[in-house]
Amino acid sequence: MKRLDKIIFQNAPRILLGAFFLCSSCKERATPEESSAKDPGPVEKPIPVNDAGTAIPGTPATPVEPKETAAETGEGIRFMAYNIENYLTMTRYVKGGDKISSPKDPKEVAALVKIIVDEKPDILGICEIGTEGDLQDLQTRLKAAGLNLPHYVHTGGIDSTRRLGILSSFPIAGNHSKQELVYEINGHERMMGRGILDVTIDLPGGTTHFIGLHLKSKRELEDFDQAEIRLNEARLAREHCDAIFAEDANARIVLYGDMNDTRKTPPSRHAHGEI
Image (cartoon, helix red, strand yellow):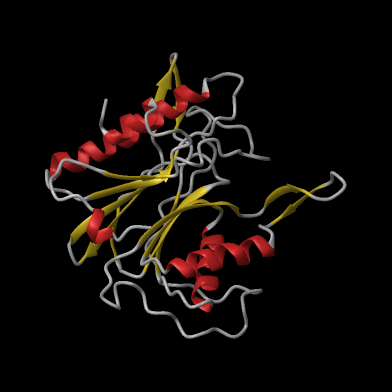
């Protein structure tokens, strides 16, 4: 993981693209059928920026002293982007082939927390978080393990199962996230599955937009081409970035997330502004 103050670009309009290119085919399991814009179902309103909530039952009982973040030790700002793979309650398979509704396996959660704490990010961008309570649960577990990221935003799109989140040691100056984004395929309107997370954080080097994405997976659908869905979502993300640059040609943007595609494919190139 590179130091953020070393990799944020200096000359706009450019975008630093931090993407999960190795996670090019994340699977979606036990998810309700995807909805069109004509039948969007309930969509959560943007969550206001909050400090850490109360402890969630089941978290470690004896907290340890929080470790100093990179920003506090003068080592630069550390940013980490992570698809934490279904940190939520959902239908899961168990031994014997049965299915039950359960949260993420405790052993997997413990391993995940250790990975994050070992990296000591000042800012953590997350894909595949569940509810706001799930995000607070992760936040509380990280703090108990020594990493305090007290500021957060939780948001998403039409997919009410898998959401986006960001945790930060710095106060979040603004929440500009978009949830109800519509595009059209063959005359049919659809809504962006996970929306666009967009927060501004006042860093020592200047105010910076952190824009999180989780584009459509490669799981096939009966009525629509998954690659075309992903391309349209990438176009919406690029339009969002262009609107920021239209207001401020020197805007600083970190675009990150799970693109569910490789670097040179059209969705990634659109998001990056190459085509």
